[in-house]
Image 1 (cartoon, rainbow, N blue to C red):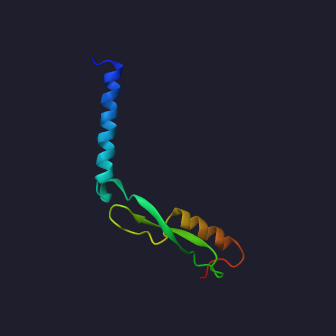
Image 2: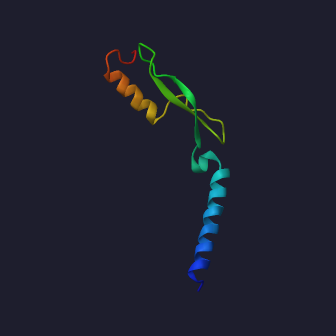
Image 3: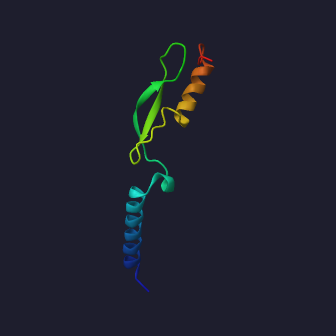
Length: 86
């Protein structure tokens, strides 16, 4: 049986291998790797609220501001006077 140092080295090598696989795996296998690329108006009357927009660093897909943080921002905006245009 390998001593603890050898076990640790094997485990670290396995982690490094998995990280390399994840970095190059298709989005369908591990999900998009989103990068913040800017923002867009949330749709409110006064146009002062912004929601984040992300792009996948692997496949180039864009969420066009349709993400969890944007949903929260829109909900907060709608609860204030003026809200989001219907």
